[in-house]
Length: 305
Length: 251
Image (tube, rainbow over all chains, first blue to last red; front, side):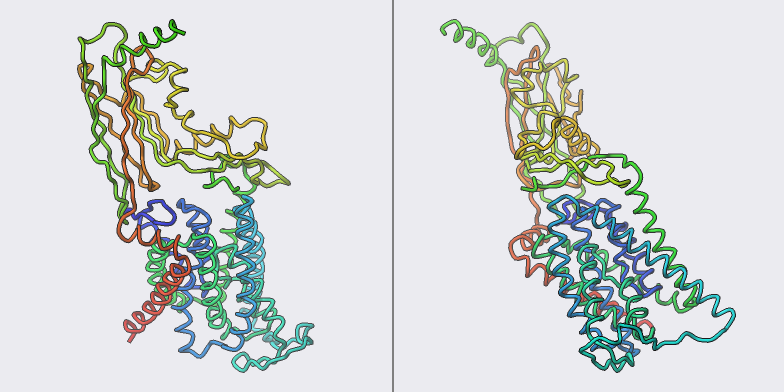
């Protein structure tokens, strides 16, 4: 069944998109990430124009995060004050990101920027996660001493300290705002929620306990992604509601199946799988940049004047 | 001067001898959510005021052209080990869709001069460059434009796809692809003899998004803030509904 997308102005197979949404939802349910980092490249692959893919990806992230955060609220695993502080940075970051996105689109370098961002970020995060989960598996096997949680580094010496009860932290608001800012910029440029950057940053930079990390990150991402969607809709009119709707339907179903499957697997195994997946996506995009493309020329609507 | 006029008259006279009368299977195409391309049949007949002329056989070329839009063609080259867009050429107006059907090999039935004046063959459909040119040779860029659009099924040349019966009746079938842009599509029908156009006929086909598609498109352009909010409300509702349904299933 073909479906004509009014903004992208292409017809795609509805089941393909439903399947993509489902696959990404499945992974997001399994690993607790928004899945935006997968959906955007997959949309490029089925022929959606990059701008529409990025903007619509942000819209899809809103839906999957809302779905996810409701479950986390039930478990009391959301640190709302921390989420709000991250959000302040996040909103600034997305405004900055959409601005940069539009400049790059005009210069014809948006594809490159998005691809480079994917390779660098996914590559480094994938490697970090892979090492970390290997170490965690070794630790679990040897059952040695647990890791110390409250490590006092330079981050804890900054001013404007606030108590974050749910996280059991008393730290300055500056690091969370900066983390939010960086994730916001990336979210806008890459069409991702940024969960895969936010989660490690919260654990390793802010020292938050793992149990509140996913809920808080999802809580914050809802607003950042919503703001990004709105900005893309207003500044470059590239959000395709029809495409988003089909993706969302596939995604929410997939996410529910994924979270059931996830409950049966061990955390370390999940992390290694996620790390491998992230590395595979990064590797694929890196190859596209390094190998000579089959078609050296590309077309963009408008004369860029 | 008089001699030139006489020559012109001589050339023009046989043109009046044959006229094209044509029809379209439909002059209106609505793009709905389930739009999956469309078929267009262009048919017609040759009206004659005299006996069938001697000489070269009658040939027919039918073109179907979509609305024109600006396009930028970019070329990648290898910079510091990675492939980056470097040079670009802007084209002010290139048809978003262009299909040509002929009754025979285009090189044989149409002279190059006539092709240039009428802009019939696919490479000639690409027009004016936009702004100052930053590259020395634009030919590879326009060739790439035609090549890419041909691969996407947007530009095509179908030689021998106009069926001509008894030098009088003709028909051409066009398949419009699913990735169609809305706008006014122009059809042109040329009657040719000995490589020269003896008569032509034009008609328009209106392609419009209809229903939800139209509404969404118009809203996204005219009230982008409202459109963005609709997109968000849909997403939030879908997320909430999914969680709620799943909770119901669990309990």
